[in-house]
Every structure is written in structure tokens, then in C-alpha cells.
Length: 270
Image (cartoon, rainbow, N blue to C red; front, side):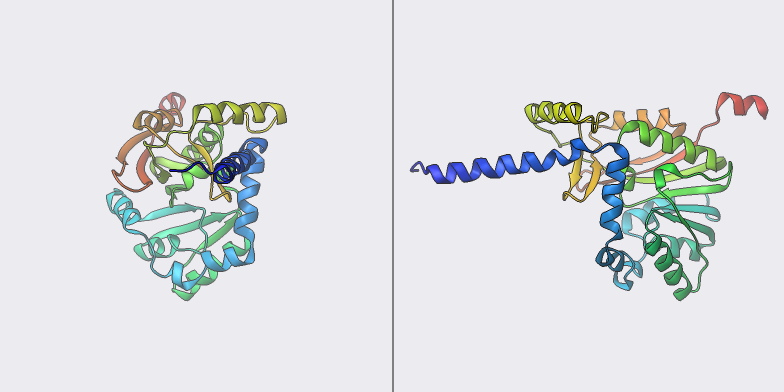
């Protein structure tokens, strides 16, 4: 094979370009990463896509159905985090749940409520960012976060804060259903990780960066979970017992059914 310097230069520029693009993840703080994603989802074309009949009407995906079918509760007050156009909320309402949906894009809340009326079910929409939910204590029997959106919350600290608020919003014995990005084969380049972390420090940006963090398609933050131990530790630290944990051999979408743990002070009060 003959040496072609221009091909080598081109390949190097592509690699450098990919690395430079990856630094976008490092200069943004957690609030910036959330806003970065919100702006993308707020684009009119994005709203139309997520709220379209083509996407909404098929309802729950197969792996979402498996999670819901494994849930011990079949009715009650249910909160869907990241409701989008109502794809998950509508079939859950048909099952008999009283559904509330949260999304950080007001236009999607409006479209979700419209789609619910079109299907003859009730849906209460609330505009808000899912990691900062603020509902009264013991409001819901079930809270659901599907489509791997658990991985869209930047930093472990922010995810633990969300888990604490979810736990407080659940009734005693309540359940949290979530899906996450699962990729045990993901191995970020060690040297590139060092340079990315240096960029975070120099810009006072994403100081909570973890192995497995990425900008999925350069449009949305995603944290890839790479071990069962990491997941179980995080869920436990957030105040939940793992009832069911699905880690697929193929594909990237894992799922979990978590039950609210009783805190020591709650045990004393009861």
C-alpha cells in the first residue's frame, strides 16, 4: 500500500475535528447541558416530530411494555417525566392510571394534551425540567422515565438529587420505572479523557464529568452506564430498592423497576 500524505492529513484533521467537537461537552456546566438539549427539542421541527401521530399512536415500545407489565401496580396516580407528545402517557391512561406529564418544552405539553383528547383520555400537563421536579410529598404511586432519559441527566450528583425528589413524590411503596443508556463495551480513549477534563478545568465547565459522558449526535447529553455495579450503587444511594433490572446483551436501552425505600426517620414516624 503506497503512502499518501494527503490521505493521512485528511484522516488526522477528521480525528482532530471530532475531538474538538467533543469539547462542547466539557465547556458546559450541568444547567448549560440541560438548556442545550431543551433548545434542540424546542425547535418547531423537533416538536412536530415528537408530537406526530406517526410517533405517538404506536404507544409503548416492546421493552417499555415489559417494564409496565412487570409493575405490581396497575392503576393509581402516575407521573410521566419527559412526556413529549404523549406516546407513553396515552396508553398508560387507557390502562386506568391518572396521568400527569412533565416536559421542559411548553409546546410539547400542549401537543401531548391535544393528543390525549384525540384518544379520549385525560392528561394533566406540567411544564418543568425533569431533574428539578417539585411535587408535594406522596403524590404518586408510580413515576416513569422512559426512552433512556435517565441517562440524559448530567452528573451523578444531579441524578441523585432527582432520585431524592422522585422518592419524596412517591407514596409509600411507590415505584419508579426508568430506562437508561447501557453500553458495557464503551471505552473512552484515556488520553482524550485527560485532555477533555483539562478543558473542563480551564473553562470552569463540566467539572462533574464522568467516564461514559457524551453528546449523543452532538445534540443531547447522554451518560452511558457501563457496569451493573454502577447502576445498583446509584439507585441505592438515591433511596431505592432494585426490584427488576434489565441489562440487554444487544442494544443500548436498559430498564429498571425501583421501589421507594423507607428512610430511617420515616420508619420512626410510622
